[in-house]
Amino acid sequence: MTRALVVDDSHFMRTVISDMLEDGGIQVVDQAANGKEAVELVAKYEPDVVTMDVEMPVMNGIEAVERIMQETPTPILMLSAVTTDGADATLEAIDKGAIDFFTKPGGSISTKLSGQKDELVAAVRSTAQADPTVGTPTTAPAPQPVEEPPSEFLDDPTLIIGASTGGPSVVERIVSELPAAADLRVLIVQHMPDQFTGRFAKRLDAASEYDISEAADGARIGGGEALVARGDYHMLVAGYSNGRLRVKLDQSEPVHSVRPAIDVTMESAAERIDDPVTAVVLTGMGADGAAGIEALKGTGARTIAQNEATSAVFGIPGRAIETGCIDRVLPVSEITDAILDAIRRDTQWMTT
Image 1 (cartoon, rainbow, N blue to C red):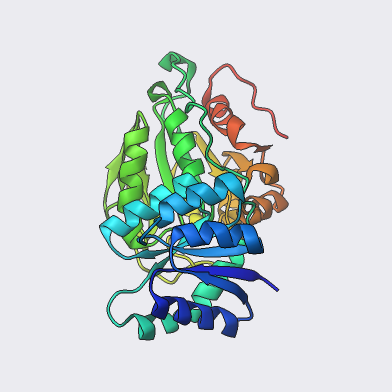
Image 2: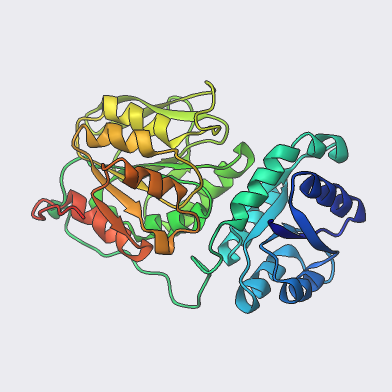
């Protein structure tokens, strides 16, 4: 049975969350009212997963995540308010080592949150399966982009990245390493709610040489630009000509119970893009991306999957590998080099 520690400064919220988890078959080993208590109780009980509030007295959730990851690495699910400040704080907690997040509704919390019991239980179970030591922040400096002459790269290349649980920090690392000289058009599908994708795009933009923004319906990008799929919308490649991509957003039915779905973006790219494409699937729960990888491989795209050892959750890359359509399976540290390898003119692309 999955064992959870519930952390929230509200006694009412701790009770509601604990009852929901217990009803869903998850054992709540204890509750903490602030981050300091959480650090102590994690060391005492060694739970499988922690649900962590963000704003708390004594020690907030971000500080608690950092301490727990340093002292007793444990999978942590952030419970975040659906606000701009909540999104920023949650993404900072993920930087510190939290695995994933779940948004708490506003308004009549007890009624609305109770209506999300199944989703919360599923998120807690998913987070509990993650390896908390993968992607734990270190003091090592971030890798710097490698400057290379533009002539070394193929004309008009496109990169499509798909990720879910544990993905934000991995995506940020990869885009921060991409040199402007590669002149890629980049599409990023990270499973994330609508309230978070805009903030995530701004974080990526600040970390990268590329101009990165949240996708809007009808948006167009050329070389050196990137779009992050907007939460609650599928992002489709609707047009491609003269090295420029046009995307369309829609709210058709979720695929694999998610929207945006990696498969939708990749399959539409396979239909529209006739220049070089590299597709990368990263850490995450589920099978989203496998069908998209198959579709792109059928058009000659080059494909890369994150390996199990560096994936917080090996569902998405694992299922893609099972299709037989992945060229290379690599640790995070080697993925950017492989992307550049895939678009160099003078490199023979080797498959795993």
